[in-house]
Length: 215
Image (cartoon, rainbow, N blue to C red):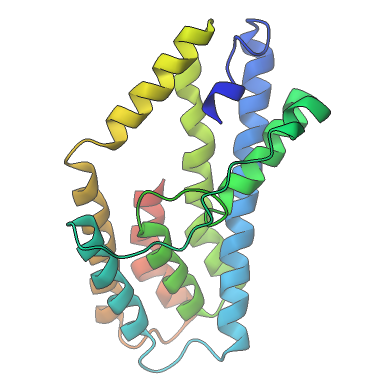
């Protein structure tokens, strides 16, 4: 995916590349916001926020924190690649936007960490589409803006090096601890908030912690 939106693909023009990155980021933010709003809507449909709903968030935080520390816990995901034919069928900015929408929804592609699952639990427990959108949108922003690392990729080899650098960075041993801290902090914040009484309280507590770390 990263190698399809680089300056070299845009004929070396960083201006055209920047437009595609902006379109991609916009699509990713909208996709993530839609996911969060849908999760909040699911919460509304099942009667959230509930008394004791904070237990769901805390349980998710504990389970996926354990995953970061080596416990085998599956992450809901489809592991599908984005449709390659979009790049051949649409202008660069349009295909970049569409790729962003797909990647922003998270679960339709590959997820290395379970932090989005905990954010999803917070969105559902809050019972508010708006709060859910605000909590999950930073995930899309981060996915979209990650393409900025290809700024100097003016050759195919340079794009490949950028992808390899991203992969090496994501495998650094301290990365899981950031996610553990985020999920633990969100769980504690929601638990201390007391039974997740309102969507606004969810957003101020665990949602705020997760949104910042996802960004």
